[in-house]
Amino acid sequence: MIISIEKKKFSEAVHTVARFAERKSATLPALSSILIIAGDEGIKMRATNLETGIDLKIEGVCITKGVVAIPATILQQIAGSFTQEGKITIEHTGDTISIISGNSKSSIKTIPYEDFPSIPFPENPKNRIVLPGVLLRSLFTSIASCASSSTVRPELASIYLSIEGGVMTAVATDSFRLAEKKIPLTNKGTQGKFLIPAKNALDIAQALPDNDIIMSFDEHQCAFVGDMGMVVSRLTNAVYPDYRQIIPKESIVEAVVLRKDFESALKRTTIFSDSFQKVRMSFDPKKNTFSLFARNADVGESVEALNAQITGSALELSFNHRYLSAVLALTSSESLSLVAAGIGRPLIIKGVGDTSLLYLVSPMNQ
Image 1 (cartoon, helix red, strand yellow):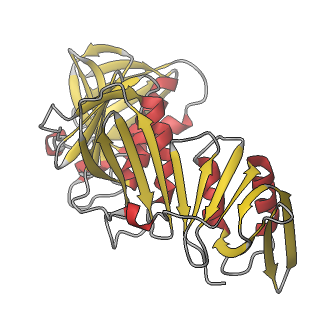
Image 2 (cartoon, helix red, strand yellow; image 1 turned 120 degrees about the vertical axis):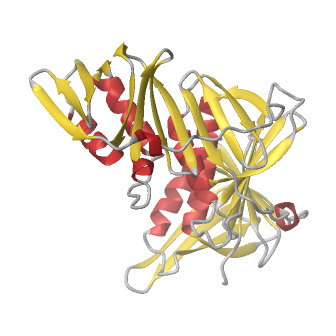
């Protein structure tokens, strides 16, 4: 195999594909490698950790055909060392490959590519929708942080995707806060629901192009296919909790505040939060003020009173400040609506004018 690729495209491809390789696999070295394929379909890079997999197309010149597996970490280090513009040539001979750049030449021992596992593809082609990759990337990167970081309950470490009536609903929760985002779809016929591990969704998001992709799924895996190639993830085999049961149906107070005021006030208040990261929130309908308060015995205390439109009854609740600030990555609305149902009940935050988002956060003990 002999191929020629621009340094920048090679580095970008290696950086993307390496996310899908195992960091270190003692039992199957092929899982910690990147497979380079040069043939009639052009040049491709593949990697899989059996949880996710990628088949990425790369622009380049295929001089002679071939297949080779190279340790991903070594390839990453070499790709990261390239600085100047230009092209590299990759030549495969025997059990080594040579990466040639100008007067530089690196020789790397290869891994038997016959051990490289196949990347599964969803078997049911009926479950497929077309949507912009940039939209799905934004959805995954914003909502994945709300999923649980623990794998004790796999369903909570996943993103729940439901497609019904021309709308895709994505939900993530760690049982302390919950985010629900809705995206309208042009294909109104497809219906279905599945759970994708949040960690996998973040890796997939980095590989998605801006233009349209085809998302297809069956009971076991989902795939994202576009001009760049294909990305696949296994699905979580679990039942997602009925999250709608915890969304309050009634409220006793609502405050509408400017997003920039809320963000800056929260930043200052968190400086004074205690070891539990607690911030107290107060609704005062008589004065039309919304306040944030924090006290730390070692630092001091802070009160931030904001002008707000408040309807309902006076109320005080305490929250983990990290969960409050998380909503800022989920909406770009200029104003935020904060709706409370009472002591011990979850707070609902929405972007004013943004019907796609519902964010819910549970209070702490007072």
